[in-house]
Amino acid sequence: MKRLFKKLARTLWRISAPVSRPVMRKFDLHMMRLFGAVSLRADAPGNLDLALSSVVRELARLQIQVEILQQQIDDLQSMDREGSRSESRLLVVGDIG
Image (cartoon, rainbow, N blue to C red; front, side, top):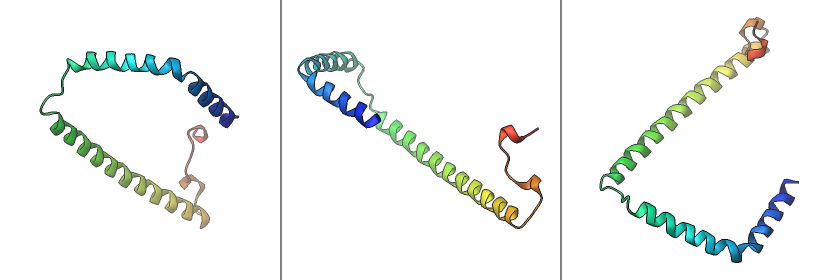
């Protein structure tokens, strides 16, 4: 069903190309004129580098956290297999109480 809808949408987009291309071109030109007045500052590449490095640091931190959580899940599952207490298993919020 989803594939059929996508195919129909692509076909309609291609059919509307003679109308949509000039409209999109005018919109792009208008936006370029609007944002052309707001030029990029000289320190933008430095800010971009700082932002990207902080994103990379955050990604590395999250990967480490996911690995730790996965190890804890594996440990809990192995304890369940060995017949430990039922209180040590993972709970879903709806199971509490």
